[in-house]
Amino acid sequence: MLTWAYPYFELPLAAAALALLLVLAYVLRTGRLARALGRRAGRLAWKLPLRLPAGALLLLAWLGPARGVSPQPVRTAGKDLWLVVDVSRSMDAPDVAPSRLLRAQAELQTLVEHFPADRLGLVVFGSQAVVQCPLTYDQEAVQTFLNTLSTSLLPPGPTALRVPLELVLARLAPAPGGAGGPGRATAVVVVSDGEDFGENLEPPLRALARSGARVFAVGVGTAAGARLPLSGGRLVRDAAGRPVTSRLREAPLLQLAAQTGGQYVALNDRQNGFPALLADLRAVQGPTEQVRTVAVADNRYRLPLGVALVLLALDVALTVVVIRP
Image (cartoon, rainbow, N blue to C red; front, top):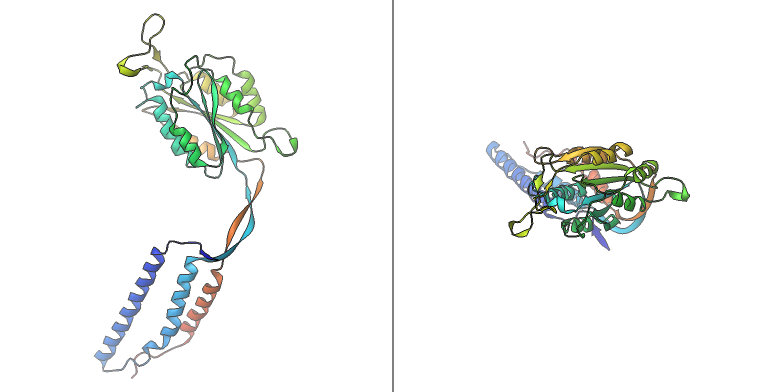
């Protein structure tokens, strides 16, 4: 069955129409010139049997006719990218407009689009940690889960940064043949306001550093902080009835990045560290090459292109007197 590498014919057909118009303009111009000189344009059409087929064959080669498929090995050095997102109640704070979570959500959706050849996974955490999306090449699936992020996904409670790190650590891809370390480069992007009421972060950070995984931390919020809104214009209050103010805590996030060779960036209304984060993530290279076999259509453009070039060479070699004396 004949298929086309470029099935959108609008641009090639427009180019063919333009070429025909230019040929027609050339014929008319040469005829007018011959009449003005009182001569005959006797051999004007002699090269058309060369030029018209050559143009048609070039158009055919442009469209890329393909027949059948063949397996081709593709070597990749991809990486695994875990997005670890804080969905605790404090991420509703409006000190980063429209809220910490909504702003982070928008930036993460843009980030995902830049890694089509890598596996991505999504972990959400608060008082607990849950794998929302396992590692996948399906960008649309990751985007779908990002769209569902909400501070109501998990039950309320104290936020613990250690739990999602241990969850990612347990899911690192093993190296081929049982060798130590992960089989693919792993980057972990932790997006949080840094509020951590959990246990010591040292054990999971040491384990991540030994595995070769790097943690990149994004601090969402401001040092001044903001009060946490509830529905109906109410505010979250503490046990004494006072409004709770949530502030960015950079210290645990800086610790995540420093102990694993990652980077820390800020996200607020004055700073957007995602462009720098994107550059750092692109620089993470896979330590092992994988060979994947993909089915590739057999493009047969060479035959029409070769015949077209022969016809054009004949066109150049043959000299024709257009206007007879």
